[in-house]
Length: 246
Image (cartoon, rainbow, N blue to C red; front, side, top):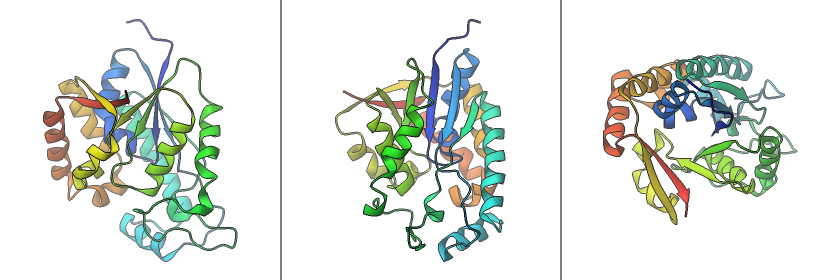
């Protein structure tokens, strides 16, 4: 099998989004000899031990105490998931929205489904610069559509679009299951392409999602429900759906 020089780079807002949204296709790509890297953007270590009430609530759901534990443990989960898919995991140091503060130390977000704040107008350009510094000319980029309007997904999409490079978009899972009405407005002016995913790819996709054990209760009702929803999504699209700007 001949290795292909160029890389597929999946821009993942959080430590699970790429595997959730495109795990089956990533597996098939790596099995075909493609170099695939998952670049998670919002997975830095917060500079303070203090937590907002919102972050404390989420930590309780995850069964973790400190932000350092959350980021450390989730990075391990991410590496394990990427290994199942045959991909390489890279971690950037931007903070998850639940840990971000303004200059006065006020917590910026008490809800993840909210438009970007004016105080963070600089952030997409900052992220774009960090991504650009690591890109090679032949890299192919895959970005989340931002379905569900999660602030971090929207921000990473804005950053990706500042790069002025061709982008392949994938639908955010599980947000697509919860907000199916967001798909059409998120893909206006785009053309869709579906790549076949093998049965082995489908199996690896589910296994890669299970690697994010700390997040399962937040993402799906249970393991069985996850397997069923991913399988139905696979059948509905006939594989991995991508969107590109026409």
